Image (cartoon, rainbow, N blue to C red; front, side, top):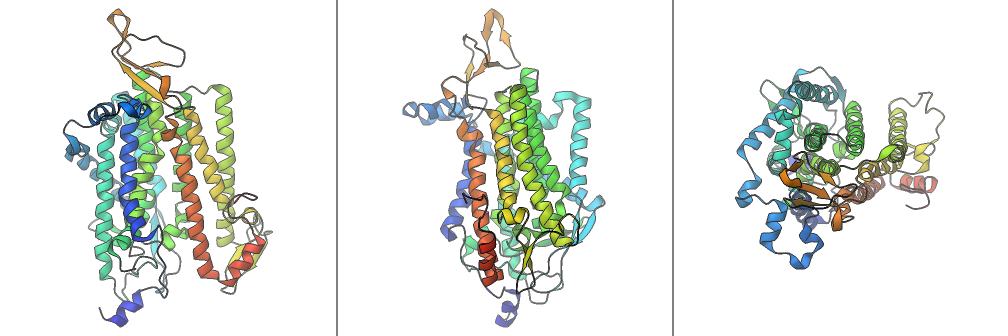
Length: 496
């Protein structure tokens, strides 16, 4: 490609490094997968949550840690499985078939720099309903022995590995393919503003191409980024939750109110996002970020396997909230969801139909570029009120785990106390408890796992807000400074 042609497919302005540049990209690409494995091994049904050696680090040895964590007998090779690989690939293929086969709405995306708009077919909600319905009917027929649920529980770590491999492969594929983007191409391909720094690792991580698409025989055109955004990972999150619910029932003969609440809340969040699928077209992920390892890993690995940690914890150590606990957590969830959904609805209605009677009274500021920025209603309250609602909802996912932490004791007679759990294998002859799950000295330490989501999500939202801030400064210039005088607070008035 000539220099002139190459310049025509590049953004007019390049962005500076984000996420700490190449060093941050390296740390994130290798550090976050380690956290996924750490959470899987450190909180388990073999020895406890956390493993006992974490509470008594002076007694820590490698061999003891491997035993407590349930490390595979064949070492690192046990982290992967051809059987699990085939299962996951079949799941992805089925998701692609559903996108192609089921009816859906066709929506145009935002205006591209190179001109024109891309078209998107949306049917993630009906696709998810199809999958969950198949799983539900099969569970009704086969009961808790339906192989899907047992497979997920028994191969949890291997599922992480396979999805990580898919994310890595996709990132490599779209990075290499991005160099074939040419000026004036008929497919409206273009590079992302922040993904062509020239640093291989950083560009691979952040994503070079804005909206990579492929044509699959029979299935048709697939937008890789839009597909990964809401399909395999988001639905996978709920399938993981449901597998954990089934496991709890198999072990204890009941399903606790805490795990039901978490699964209900997270299902509401996921299916709400799927129902509102066209709304992703105005998000930074679609309009600004390229598709690289950052989004691939976040969508396919980080989201399903870290967001479901609370349900996995409760599958081993059920917590009964009671009426007052349920009411309190429902209030937190309802309050957060009200802020999140009503603020997003207000923004979407203003963008699509400013004359809608529900938002026609709102005040706004007109920029020199012709855009309109809301200065009243939710978006006069702060510049990102939806982030506040999102974070409040995050608490309702963690609070049902209570003061978390447990120890698993095997094959020894122990004194039972209120709140301690005996698994479904019950008592063996002579009154010997085969496996007992109790809090003991681990109480409180498990919160490092079950409340990790609240801390991480706060960091994520603040970082996302800072990225939004920089993008708006570039887009609106002096108008953004004037807007900030009208809407002072970023997320939470009086605090941030």
